[in-house]
Image (cartoon, rainbow, N blue to C red; front, side, top):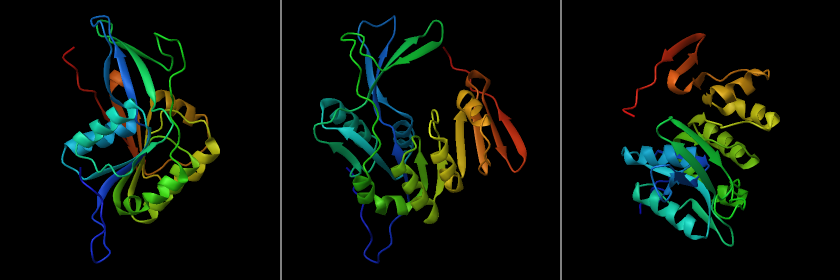
Length: 239
């Protein structure tokens, strides 16, 4: 496990940091008897992918002290991430999402209910302010700071990273607190949203950040910047 440290002269090496959602995906398909279990959540997926590409990455995440949390931490560690800011809270459960995948129809659906017990599965909880304080060195050292869930704590972290010179990328799955979103806007350099989330945003009045990416599923994505719009097609999957 790589650890995070401040150099003797007080300088911190630059890295990519992120704060937000990490979950266990239980993926069920008609062709398998048992679900596949894998690391999920936008923040965890993005940061783990960047670590596997050779970048120095520090996830700032909230997990439980259960077996699910141990599995997710191991996946993050195996990817090469700095893991000292992955906080495992005692007596808490790690988030779990059930995904139903139909490969033949190219469709998927998500559920927060266990199909066997029908109980509500553990969900995302924002990181505690005390843990965010413990990660301030990594937040200030980030050249890129990624967020996918907005809370009072992540808002403060975005402000901290922005003021330290980081490029801040915000990728919400949906927005419920528009007041908090407007407070975050001055610190966002790149906003990325699905067409569904974009439709929610368009119903509100706000000044868009310098770069606004909208994804359109199999149709690809559009990038809006400096009054120009660029369209990029999706890459066709083999199946």
